[in-house]
Image (cartoon, rainbow, N blue to C red):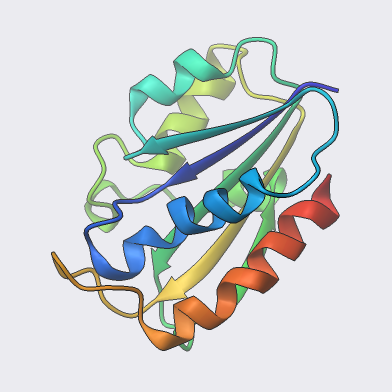
Length: 148
């Protein structure tokens, strides 16, 4: 099965580095054949360029959320596509949700999609990961490996 594990985030923006840090750990893990790791940084329309031939998509990102910082959530395809799109809720243009809806309209959306996300605390330039997000890295890697 062709699997793309794509992380989003900016390593220079505090907890937004969650995705790239999880990806770094996954680079050292044994992954099934056909698995590709990509750091896509900010999710925009260019995400569509990476979906051709992908059967399973696993997204990794930090989210601004009302959950306690460090809370890990795993979303499936149906849940992601049911979330209302609010362009103002994302610093990315278009938002990841908008991009997933575009992919579906263009018949590019893989049948299997999951998102491993952490509730983040701060996104300040130059800040490191907060302690809660750092503590969630191992569980995030295990969640991704469990999905494989």
